[in-house]
Image 1 (cartoon, rainbow, N blue to C red):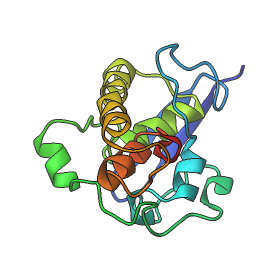
Image 2: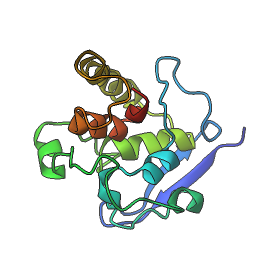
Image 3: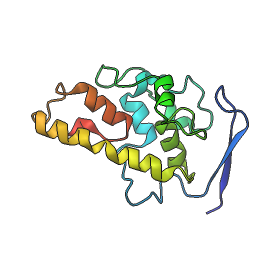
Image 4: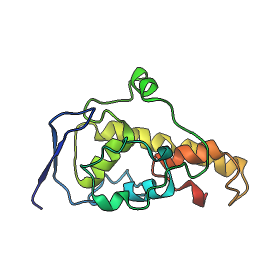
Length: 160
């Protein structure tokens, strides 16, 4: 596969370039098995539909069709970007956090930060266990905040 270079110019990154060395949506780390694509996440309703503040020229236009402007479970499950920065969760290459990393990873970018981000993604499975233990199967009104948080991390909590 021929590599592709993407240049980002938005309010958080000026002339940032990254190289995609893998085909879109392919060749993921074997431990990273997201249940939702970035497009599906945007369409189901994550981050109140305002995560990128409309600055997403680097991603395919098809990802933006039918974007939901509200969270699927109708509840906020996010902390502020300032809080993410305070906790050290933000890597300079992805100043908007994990979802931005995932979008770029999905497009084929591979970097030294992948292992850390995949480890963070895997840590979210504790919420799946809590939902399975504390809720009746199919009861989407149970633990809505945890379910919304799981959607943020590409786990399809509508199916738990």
